[in-house]
Length: 166
Image (spheres, one colour):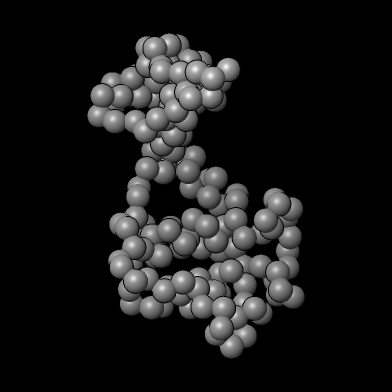
Protein backbone atom coordinates (compact mmCIF):
# COMPACT_ATOMS: atom_id res chain seq x y z
CA UNK A 1 0.00 0.00 0.00
CA UNK A 2 2.91 2.24 -0.70
CA UNK A 3 4.39 1.94 2.77
CA UNK A 4 7.81 0.35 2.57
CA UNK A 5 9.48 -1.17 5.63
CA UNK A 6 13.05 -0.15 6.37
CA UNK A 7 15.74 -2.45 4.98
CA UNK A 8 16.74 -5.32 7.26
CA UNK A 9 19.72 -4.70 9.50
CA UNK A 10 22.96 -6.48 8.53
CA UNK A 11 23.36 -10.13 9.50
CA UNK A 12 19.65 -10.80 10.05
CA UNK A 13 19.19 -14.51 10.76
CA UNK A 14 16.87 -16.59 8.58
CA UNK A 15 14.00 -18.60 10.00
CA UNK A 16 15.76 -21.40 11.86
CA UNK A 17 14.43 -24.80 10.73
CA UNK A 18 16.71 -26.46 13.33
CA UNK A 19 14.52 -25.12 16.15
CA UNK A 20 12.97 -28.17 17.86
CA UNK A 21 9.44 -28.73 16.54
CA UNK A 22 9.87 -26.09 13.80
CA UNK A 23 8.37 -28.31 11.11
CA UNK A 24 5.17 -28.61 13.17
CA UNK A 25 4.69 -24.85 13.45
CA UNK A 26 2.33 -22.92 11.20
CA UNK A 27 3.73 -20.01 9.23
CA UNK A 28 2.21 -17.60 11.74
CA UNK A 29 3.96 -19.42 14.60
CA UNK A 30 7.28 -19.51 12.71
CA UNK A 31 7.06 -15.77 12.06
CA UNK A 32 6.27 -15.17 15.73
CA UNK A 33 9.53 -16.90 16.73
CA UNK A 34 11.51 -14.92 14.15
CA UNK A 35 9.82 -11.63 15.03
CA UNK A 36 10.69 -12.00 18.71
CA UNK A 37 14.38 -11.52 17.93
CA UNK A 38 15.24 -7.90 18.73
CA UNK A 39 16.85 -7.24 15.33
CA UNK A 40 13.77 -8.53 13.47
CA UNK A 41 10.90 -7.13 15.53
CA UNK A 42 10.57 -3.63 14.10
CA UNK A 43 10.23 -4.65 10.45
CA UNK A 44 8.13 -7.73 11.03
CA UNK A 45 5.56 -5.86 13.11
CA UNK A 46 4.97 -3.75 9.99
CA UNK A 47 4.86 -6.48 7.34
CA UNK A 48 3.73 -9.77 8.90
CA UNK A 49 0.15 -8.71 9.75
CA UNK A 50 -0.63 -8.20 6.06
CA UNK A 51 0.67 -11.65 5.09
CA UNK A 52 -0.98 -13.63 7.90
CA UNK A 53 -4.45 -12.94 6.46
CA UNK A 54 -3.51 -15.03 3.40
CA UNK A 55 -2.52 -18.11 5.41
CA UNK A 56 -5.71 -19.96 4.44
CA UNK A 57 -4.24 -20.28 0.94
CA UNK A 58 -1.53 -22.78 0.15
CA UNK A 59 1.35 -22.27 -2.28
CA UNK A 60 -0.87 -22.89 -5.33
CA UNK A 61 -3.83 -20.85 -4.07
CA UNK A 62 -6.06 -23.62 -2.73
CA UNK A 63 -8.17 -22.59 0.24
CA UNK A 64 -7.52 -24.64 3.38
CA UNK A 65 -8.78 -24.62 6.96
CA UNK A 66 -5.95 -26.70 8.46
CA UNK A 67 -2.17 -26.52 8.18
CA UNK A 68 0.18 -28.99 9.82
CA UNK A 69 -2.83 -30.61 11.53
CA UNK A 70 -3.79 -27.32 13.22
CA UNK A 71 -6.65 -24.95 12.46
CA UNK A 72 -5.40 -21.91 10.57
CA UNK A 73 -5.54 -18.63 12.46
CA UNK A 74 -5.81 -15.80 9.94
CA UNK A 75 -6.53 -13.12 12.54
CA UNK A 76 -4.14 -10.22 12.50
CA UNK A 77 -3.55 -6.81 14.03
CA UNK A 78 -2.28 -4.24 11.55
CA UNK A 79 0.38 -1.67 12.48
CA UNK A 80 -2.31 0.99 13.02
CA UNK A 81 -4.05 -1.25 15.60
CA UNK A 82 -6.90 -2.40 13.33
CA UNK A 83 -7.88 -6.02 13.97
CA UNK A 84 -8.79 -8.03 10.88
CA UNK A 85 -9.40 -11.63 9.93
CA UNK A 86 -8.61 -13.28 6.62
CA UNK A 87 -9.09 -12.02 3.11
CA UNK A 88 -12.49 -10.47 3.87
CA UNK A 89 -10.90 -8.47 6.70
CA UNK A 90 -8.06 -7.05 4.59
CA UNK A 91 -10.47 -6.30 1.75
CA UNK A 92 -12.81 -4.35 4.07
CA UNK A 93 -9.84 -2.52 5.59
CA UNK A 94 -8.54 -1.45 2.19
CA UNK A 95 -11.98 -0.42 0.92
CA UNK A 96 -12.81 1.59 4.04
CA UNK A 97 -9.46 3.10 5.00
CA UNK A 98 -6.84 2.67 2.29
CA UNK A 99 -8.65 2.78 -1.05
CA UNK A 100 -6.72 5.74 -2.46
CA UNK A 101 -3.34 4.47 -1.14
CA UNK A 102 -4.01 1.08 -2.69
CA UNK A 103 -5.06 2.67 -5.99
CA UNK A 104 -1.92 4.81 -6.17
CA UNK A 105 0.33 1.84 -5.40
CA UNK A 106 -1.45 -0.33 -7.97
CA UNK A 107 -1.07 2.39 -10.62
CA UNK A 108 2.62 2.90 -9.77
CA UNK A 109 3.41 -0.80 -10.01
CA UNK A 110 1.47 -1.40 -13.22
CA UNK A 111 2.93 1.78 -14.74
CA UNK A 112 6.46 0.57 -13.97
CA UNK A 113 5.64 -2.86 -15.39
CA UNK A 114 4.10 -1.40 -18.55
CA UNK A 115 7.10 0.84 -19.14
CA UNK A 116 9.60 -1.88 -18.30
CA UNK A 117 11.50 0.37 -15.91
CA UNK A 118 11.45 1.83 -12.42
CA UNK A 119 9.38 4.95 -12.00
CA UNK A 120 10.93 8.19 -10.82
CA UNK A 121 10.16 11.74 -9.88
CA UNK A 122 9.55 12.64 -13.52
CA UNK A 123 6.62 10.19 -13.62
CA UNK A 124 4.73 11.66 -10.66
CA UNK A 125 2.53 14.01 -12.73
CA UNK A 126 1.38 11.20 -15.02
CA UNK A 127 0.76 8.85 -12.10
CA UNK A 128 -1.19 11.53 -10.24
CA UNK A 129 -3.34 12.14 -13.33
CA UNK A 130 -3.99 8.40 -13.83
CA UNK A 131 -4.95 7.96 -10.16
CA UNK A 132 -7.35 10.93 -10.37
CA UNK A 133 -8.97 9.45 -13.49
CA UNK A 134 -9.35 6.03 -11.81
CA UNK A 135 -10.93 7.58 -8.71
CA UNK A 136 -13.28 9.71 -10.86
CA UNK A 137 -14.36 6.55 -12.72
CA UNK A 138 -15.29 4.72 -9.49
CA UNK A 139 -11.95 2.86 -9.18
CA UNK A 140 -12.49 0.73 -12.27
CA UNK A 141 -9.51 -1.47 -13.15
CA UNK A 142 -10.24 -0.98 -16.83
CA UNK A 143 -9.55 2.73 -16.31
CA UNK A 144 -6.16 1.93 -14.77
CA UNK A 145 -5.15 0.01 -17.87
CA UNK A 146 -6.64 2.50 -20.33
CA UNK A 147 -4.94 5.49 -18.71
CA UNK A 148 -1.56 3.78 -18.54
CA UNK A 149 -1.80 2.84 -22.23
CA UNK A 150 -2.90 6.38 -23.15
CA UNK A 151 -0.14 8.01 -21.08
CA UNK A 152 2.62 9.90 -22.91
CA UNK A 153 5.30 7.75 -21.28
CA UNK A 154 3.74 4.53 -22.56
CA UNK A 155 3.53 5.71 -26.15
CA UNK A 156 7.17 6.83 -26.18
CA UNK A 157 8.64 3.95 -24.20
CA UNK A 158 11.88 2.44 -25.37
CA UNK A 159 11.60 -1.07 -26.82
CA UNK A 160 12.86 -3.82 -24.57
CA UNK A 161 15.82 -6.00 -25.55
CA UNK A 162 13.29 -8.68 -26.54
CA UNK A 163 11.35 -6.29 -28.78
CA UNK A 164 14.61 -5.11 -30.40
CA UNK A 165 15.57 -8.69 -31.32
CA UNK A 166 12.15 -9.76 -32.58
